Image 1 (cartoon, rainbow, N blue to C red):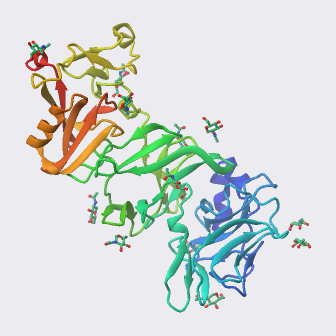
Image 2 (image 1 turned 90 degrees about the vertical axis):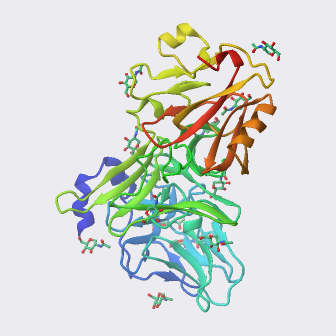
Image 3 (image 1 turned 45 degrees about the vertical axis):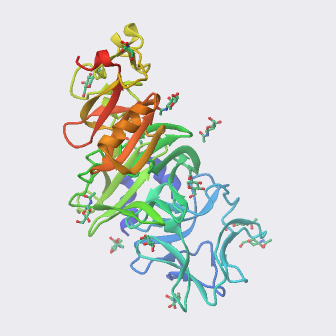
Length: 425
Ligand SMILES: *[C@@H]1O[C@H](CO)[C@@H](O)[C@H](O)[C@H]1NC(C)=O
Ligand SMILES: *[C@@H]1O[C@H](CO)[C@@H](O)[C@H](O)[C@H]1NC(C)=O
Ligand SMILES: *[C@@H]1O[C@H](CO)[C@@H](O)[C@H](O)[C@H]1NC(C)=O
Ligand SMILES: *[C@@H]1O[C@H](CO)[C@@H](O)[C@H](O)[C@H]1NC(C)=O
Ligand SMILES: *[C@@H]1O[C@H](CO)[C@@H](O)[C@H](O)[C@H]1NC(C)=O
Ligand SMILES: *[C@@H]1O[C@H](CO)[C@@H](O)[C@H](O)[C@H]1NC(C)=O
Ligand SMILES: *[C@@H]1O[C@H](CO)[C@@H](O)[C@H](O)[C@H]1NC(C)=O
Ligand SMILES: *[C@@H]1O[C@H](CO)[C@@H](O)[C@H](O)[C@H]1NC(C)=O
Ligand SMILES: *[C@@H]1O[C@H](CO)[C@@H](O)[C@H](O)[C@H]1NC(C)=O
Ligand SMILES: *[C@@H]1O[C@H](CO)[C@@H](O)[C@H](O)[C@H]1NC(C)=O
Ligand SMILES: *[C@@H]1O[C@H](CO)[C@@H](O)[C@H](O)[C@H]1NC(C)=O
Ligand SMILES: *[C@@H]1O[C@H](CO)[C@@H](O)[C@H](O)[C@H]1NC(C)=O
């Protein structure tokens, strides 16, 4: 079988992770009230791309219910009980007798994980070829719960990433390569400006931002993340949902937040001679100095093409010149001349940038540039503004701002406030 031929190519950790996955005894794709799933059985999606069952990660005292690729290196793509491992494999996945819950029980009847929904007449939980595990009513086919709306560290094609009905669908990485417990690294879709951007966090600290989507449908700071021959990504925004997702016609793809905090698009190269996962896109790009969050500090701007990557915006100078000269730039820049807080202050602009961190922004989607500038200049703490949504979509930065980079093309124009004396150089 192919999966065992693959084994010599894999890193050691995969050997340990999957040493105890066992082939299914009988192939089925669903459970019902009458037919729970117990180790060592698995569910297999109809085309056998995915399996759902019990596995451990080399530590025989931590067992998980999860979904993995049957073939492609048996990579795990979803886990039910990542916070609550089972002490041994003797658990079962049930549909509860009140016909509303999926439950993972140890054989001492502790419930280690559950997925709730409203009660159904004829519940069935089925593993689909997409890798989605759905709990639905067999009579109406109405989906009551699905693994695609409860992601762990992996986004498969078709999975939403963002907001649906007030719920945030984000990815959280494993703690390390053999512990799937959630780490402090999370990746989320941020929509404070009304244009979505992807942000990787370490707890409450940002590590990396793609910048908001620009008018060309590219993330302004990560234009490499775009439609390709292998995949197409799209953005859905309406009153109850705001998310991005991607689709593919031919390849096996997975977008994963790794335990080292890198977000990677992995593609399985199934050419006979390759048979391995390649990295198609990865963020942050370690070879790009400007991908590092706030590389040049407040009011600093990062150029990945020049030998000193950090410059201060016009009208600003390094906060600590000595540090700046030895490339310690995280303290950023300060104003050469303080603002007057009157109509004496004016605005300079810089084109083609990834906009600064939008934590301190306020947005008014109804007003145009002139009004946006007027409104900003009336508020003494408004330090910059930009127009995102074509001609409307006024985004104003209140106070210091950081993490700006210059782009070759695309991105946005940032208008920033300086004292009158700085307006003409
Ligand atoms: C559930 O699995 C059983 C056993 O393989 C199969 O006979 C049945 O058709 C499946 N049900 C559905 C709705 O696919
Ligand atoms: C898994 O591998 C086997 C053996 O190479 C192959 O016959 C089968 O089509 C593969 N299944 C999938 C879903 O790719
Ligand atoms: C759990 O399963 C293992 C392997 O199937 C078995 O050896 C062991 O006795 C079981 N332990 C308990 C507590 O049921
Ligand atoms: C737990 O499962 C094991 C193996 O399936 C079985 O031998 C044992 O009796 C079970 N224990 C309980 C309390 O159900
Ligand atoms: C991320 O997702 C998890 C579960 O999917 C959820 O509990 C958590 O609140 C989300 N985080 C944020 C910041 O929304
Ligand atoms: C997450 O961060 C907290 C506080 O900074 C720290 O105590 C904890 O060890 C971290 N957890 C992991 C899994 O790294
Ligand atoms: C990618 O291509 C799809 C289909 O052609 C299109 O709907 C979508 O808008 C494109 N996405 C981006 C970000 O360009
Ligand atoms: C918004 O989009 C979601 C996901 O595509 C869809 O389920 C929902 O019905 C849409 N809501 C509205 C109000 O159009
Ligand atoms: C992070 O982990 C991924 C997957 O193991 C690996 O491909 C990548 O090179 C790692 N990145 C860093 C910076 O270590
Ligand atoms: C600036 O970035 C380039 C790569 O884009 C790099 O070669 C150079 O060393 C960087 N300069 C500094 C001071 O880090
Ligand atoms: C501040 O404004 C006052 C009066 O509006 C003006 O006289 C003064 O020159 C301004 N100072 C600077 C630094 O622009
Ligand atoms: C937000 O504003 C506060 C107060 O000015 C500042 O300390 C903080 O650094 C700002 N955050 C960002 C991300 O710019």
